[in-house]
Length: 157
Image (tube, rainbow, N blue to C red; front, side):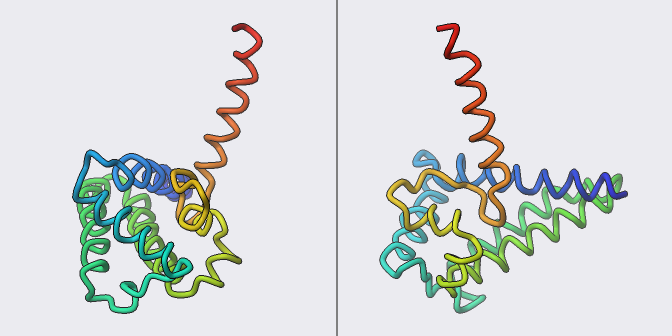
């Protein structure tokens, strides 16, 4: 059971990384790109990371985000039959994503102190970096692996 929880926790971070990078920031997927990048990023940058659309749980922004997160939970529902601890860990990860992301954008000073990677993702010069929202573990793994890969194969080119 502990193995299910640990693997699901890591899977949740990997899923967050890939969905953020390849779906929410993908210009070819107009609906998600427009909602996330053109709206959420634009509002956050204009307001010092603050996004007032998170004040109300029933706002259009919250409905889109909560609906998408609920869809992720439903898509993973078959997992509950075979690996219930993994499924509930994923549902917990989805809930924590929303709670933490909402907290960040309603309290920028808290976000800057406790989630500097996400603050940098929105407020830095280069917004196509630091894809993990809750924790940057996948980002750090990808960066370290990339540096090792380049170092290893650079000498043979």
